[in-house]
Image (cartoon, rainbow, N blue to C red; front, side, top):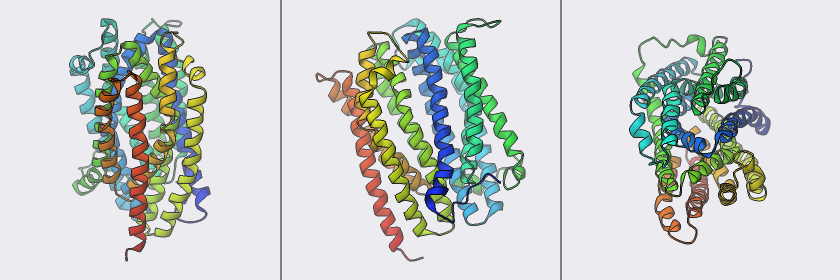
Length: 450
C-alpha cells in the first residue's frame, strides 16, 4: 500500500510520528464526533444527556468485543508483515473481519431485544430519561456492527503502516454527523424533530458512511484486502490465534466498562444531573485518553512489526521515543483541565446548578492525565509484543479497586467528588505500575538469548 510507512528501518521519530499523527488526528476527530453529539444533546437538556450517557455505556461495553477482534487482528497482521509472511497476514485479516461481523450482529440483536432490563439496571429517576435511553440504546447498539467493522479496518490498516485512510474515513463520518445531528435532533427542513432518537440515527448513519469509505479504500489495496474472501470457510488456527491475543484486552475492556456501569449506578444516586456531568466530563476528558490511546495504537504496530523482524534494539528505542512524546502530552492535558474547567464545561451544559459539579469533575480528573497517557502508551507497547495479559491484569485489578474506594470516599465530606477521586487515584497507580512492569520486561527481553 503506497500510503504505508516503513516501521522497520530509518529514524524512529519520523516513522513513528508519521504513523501516529494521523491516528491521533483520527482520535481527535472521533472525540469531536462525540463532543458534537454532546453539544447538541446538551441543548435539549441535562435529562437528554443523562439518557444518552446511560445507553452509551452499552456502546462502550460493545467495544470490548470489537477490541477482541481488532487487537488480535492488528497484532498478528503486523507481526506477519514484519516477518514477510504476507499470506498469513491475509488469513489473520480475514479472520478478524469475520469475527467482528459475527460478534457485532449478535450484540446488536441482543441489545434490541433486551433494551428494557439493560436500561433498568441504572435505576434512573425520570420516566422520560428511561424512555429516551432505551430508544437510543436500540438504535446505536442495534447498528453496532458498523462500528465493529470500522475499528477492525483501522487496526489492520494501522498494522500495515497506513493510518491516513482511517483519518480520512473518520473525518467524513464527522462531517456527516455534524450535519445530521441538528437536523434530526431539532427537526430542520422536511425532517421531524426526533430529539435523542435523532442523535442515535445520525450516529449510526455516519458510521455506515465510514464503513463504506473503508471498503472503497480496501478494494484498492493489493497487499491484503483484495485477497480477503469473507465468505470462505473460517481458518480455525488463525481465528484461535486472534482470539488468544485479543481475549485479554477484550475482557479487560468489558470488565472496565462493567465496573464503570456500577460506578454510574452509584452516580445516579446523586441525581440525573450527576449522570449528565459524568457523561459530559468523560467526553471532555477524552481529549487526552483518546489521543493517548491512538498513539498507543501506533506504538502497538511499531512494536509488532519490529518484534516480527526480531529487532530488539529498535523496540527499546521506539518505546523511549514514544514515552517522551506522551509525557509532554499528558502534562499539557493536565494543565488544560485544571486551569480552564469552567470555560470548557460551559460549552456543553450551561445550566448554573450543574456547572459546579462539572468543574469539580474536570479538576479532579485532570490530576491523573499524565499517568493515564503513559499507561495507554505502555499498554500499546506490551500488546504489540503479543503480551496482552500484563496490561489487562493491571487494568482489571486497579479499575475494580475504584468501587470500594468510591464507597469509602463518598461516605466522607467529599460526597460525589469521592467517586471522581477514586477514578483519579486508580489511574495514577495504573500508570506507575504498568510502566514499571514493562521496563522490567524490556530488561529481561534484552538479556535473553535468541
